[in-house]
Figure 1 (cartoon, chains in turn orange, yellow):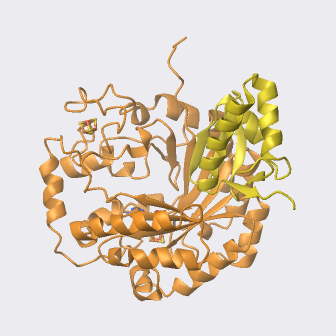
Figure 2 (tube, chains in turn blue, yellow):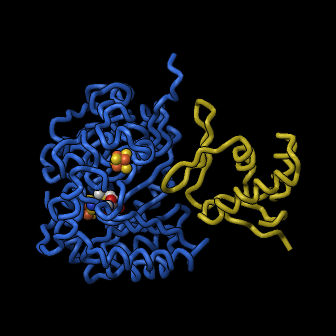
Figure 3 (cartoon, chains in turn orange, green):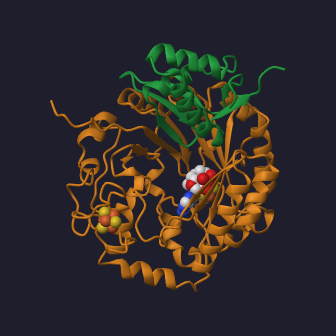
Length: 358
Length: 93
Ligand SMILES: C[S@@+](CC[C@H](N)C(=O)[O-])C[C@H]1O[C@@H](n2cnc3c(N)ncnc32)[C@H](O)[C@@H]1O
Ligand code: SF4
Ligand code: SF4
């Protein structure tokens, strides 16, 4: 027997569908959605959820695309809940009517995360590509009135970064207890639109001061998670807490990914739950084992003190920016490819946004 | 928290005991792995029992000094309260 602690997933992201009625240009969903049309059936998802629980997963996140477009959402929440999983719905809220919300809560939903594009309909509806801001506000209120936890999420980018103080005020006004201010991460559509979405250094610095003051003022009332912008740190984030260490994502058509952005990595083949069990895929598929731990690392990571702190950063980012998922994340200031990130960060001039489409 | 406060879990917070006996506190954006003292204490959180009662149970089970147990529990409950995972129900007047 190996003396090493067994590595087991804790968290399963169920991307139920990539369909969506909105068109956020910052969406991290893949650009080409054609191959995801053959969505898993209800019973396939139920099987995945029970396999996940048996594998040690404790939390199921239902996302997409827009997960409320799946008519069987309540059935899936119920299957997860009965398997003993904590259930989290990640939604933009436009379909969260009373009847659906009540059904989800009866089915055992523990937590809802609702995203807004901006604190007001202008420019929120323009970013979303539809008139939906007021519907979201109504959904927030409905969730607040019920016995289910709520997080408000807002993705920050150059077009709304200056409104960060208003986002916090909006959250306070709506009695939100947890606010996630997520700087845009550059995958999928966001990667495509990165030069228009990239905040300026001045915006990022101003935001940090505003968040610090708000945290102080709202201590014990509202928790504010502020996800640092990708390209601005000295060292990368511990992406996924290390590849294949705690997270699994299942795409709408059943592919199992170590990270929701991993489909961008060309040359890495992902296995499908329609062909192998979740346990086999987790334990020994080449896609999961390839970058697990520290054995795969090149220099400068291999001999770096931070190698078990940030795990060499993000594999998808290394692929997208430097062309090889097996390199140090170029976001790291020690990476020989760091100049790529510096020049992207400094090239904040393009303003043309391409709306997401199916 | 005061000795007579009765803590209860916030919305969307629950204890999970895995098949391997590992106990975690599941919260909206993650899972906190609990040590043995925290496990015993949090299993008693129900909005009815007081901090004093919970501390008493910890002292009984682990044979630690009451002072020390209270100190550890204060740290634990302060942290969880600050993040909204535990709420205090003030002592009945
Ligand atoms: C892809 S969305 C799917 C759920 C739902 N359609 C929504 O937008 O809320 C999942 C979450 O990621 C956030 N998100 C989307 N694109 C992002 C990006 N490029 N970087 C960071 N967060 C992003 C959304 O705001 C949402 O909270
Ligand atoms: S981020 Fe926007 S476009 Fe992407 S799935 Fe969510 S609501 Fe739809
Ligand atoms: S060299 Fe690698 S391990 Fe060291 S800080 Fe950079 S990314 Fe992290």
